[in-house]
Image (cartoon, rainbow, N blue to C red; front, side, top):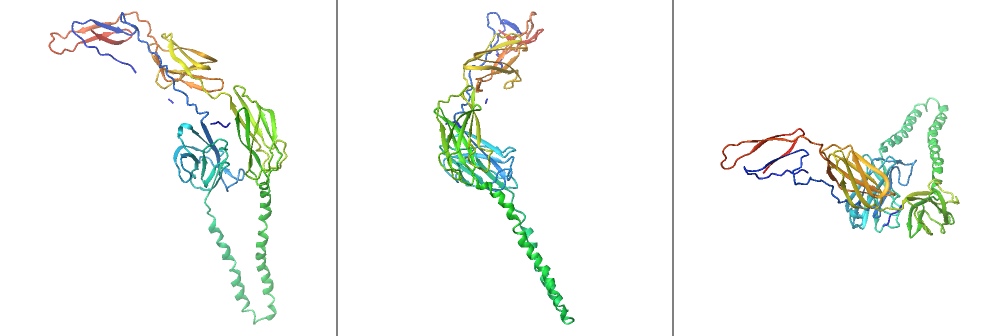
Length: 479
């Protein structure tokens, strides 16, 4: 569908005096008159980048073969680097690199640019020749071919087809020296017959006709060459026939003010007469059709819209358009008339408007709660290490108030977590990293402490103490 347009414990040292009150705090022991420390998650949210309405995708193929050839006459090239650059000047101004990709097994590449990549007037699609290859040519539907591996697009991109580019590479020719033996053979028989006739002329003049039949086989190889020349001729004739036919394809689909619009293009080598129809299908059902009212020369385009109050049916619609629906035009390729796209009704992710917060913390459980501005599912990923979440728990129900209970936790352990909610259309939002600590296990035994007597004190004195507890000593405080 055309779219208009990632992501600590503090110790306290307290000054002491000799005549001070000593308090030892064991694991799980709370000092009288103090409240327990509660660690809750940061309620901030990292907004999801709303790229769905501000992105453009350039797509195309890289083949090995002659310019203009398509499979099976051309071979897709895998692993070829294709890059998109942004600039404020036309060719040869390369501008700055935005991103690169490599082609897949089918030779296809896809490069997406976003509004926050920069403010540019031109986008340049550049193909890097793989090792052992040289560029042979390029072709673009709505872009400008500047060199064999450079296609340029000028903004605005609205209404332009960005998904039909081609690059062709070939291996450098290495068979030129093999032709040189051919002229060497032709003069060889000529001198060999001339001296042979000279000594036999005195012995018998009656043998003078002998050179005549000898010359006949000499002419035989000469006659073989004309017979070899027409041999390729019938081979080329059938391959040219499909190129003399039109070929109609749908290059793009988009919607404007409730209407579904399309672009049909003749990519063949002959005129497509007027009157052939384009049909629209929604969710697999025939919707409408309309005629193309002009002849389309090779390379010509026709844009039309199916007017009507089209409304997307949540969570989305499956849109297809088919050129030459009535098969009125004989084409070079009768299998490429149809274009299909899946359109989402909702492209805006939910937002977290409250939380996430941690409630009801126990030794082995905790409740995570947050709210979103629209219905979405609930998922919590968590673990004992920051930015690592090996565990997850969730609820598939679409709600605005989300509550997930985590169980099976270890006591007295710090956990990191993130929450995530996705609406019915699959648009998702995720929170920042949050932290909480489970409660310690019950502790019925008092800790033990013994102060080391420093003796007579003068000046600065170091006071030390021995402490022990059946569940471990968290800290010793001197007062």
